[in-house]
Image (cartoon, rainbow, N blue to C red; front, side):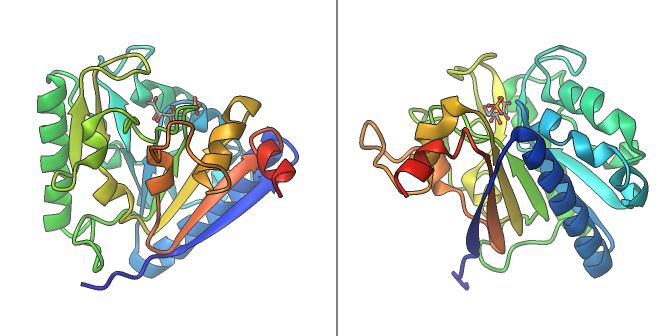
Length: 260
Ligand SMILES: O=C(O)[C@H](O)[C@@H](O)[C@H](O)[C@H](O)COP(=O)(O)O
């Protein structure tokens, strides 16, 4: 199998508002590109502040120009709570994004909230495999794992991405597509999450990071500073097959500026 990986780009903006504008344009451009190329656009969302930062995408001109009917929506991680619960990443995305645009509901892959964490991870993985069979999701020629067009990721101050946390062994999972955790250090504890082989098979990944409390970890993630405990955190493992693009506001990039 080929092993070539994609490039990495770091974009810095004066404000979170500018990150939001740039992220909307980037996402709209990729939507147009992938829909032209393959007739669909598969997008993987995170929870946290990302959905709010995506707010410009559901405003003109993008709200009316994007071919929403060709979009497919997935979650890189989800809290195992009822879909209507305030902790649910599905609810967060529904309220802030999905309820405002006409993506077909059959293209929106929420978790099965009747299952245990283990059951919900197995169920989500089985549904992804069906989408591979029906050719909605291609397999990466590099990794052999399902290949999504775009993943939109956030990062925690401990360097976690998705629900892959520094001191939890599931960050090293290499076989499964989706795994689970019942003791997440970030509440709520029960979660399911894509594994690194799936995350790193995406064509495009946007790491969307804003706020001064993340500045130290951005420095570590981009290789400018060593990890505080000597163990590379999950954020250092993210790569995309085409391009990984970091969207940083001035505050999140503040340590990078001082260290050059
Ligand atoms: O469900 C979750 O908790 C998220 O998917 C998680 O991985 C998030 O993206 C980061 O913790 C960053 O969160 P913030 O953007 O709120 O800092």
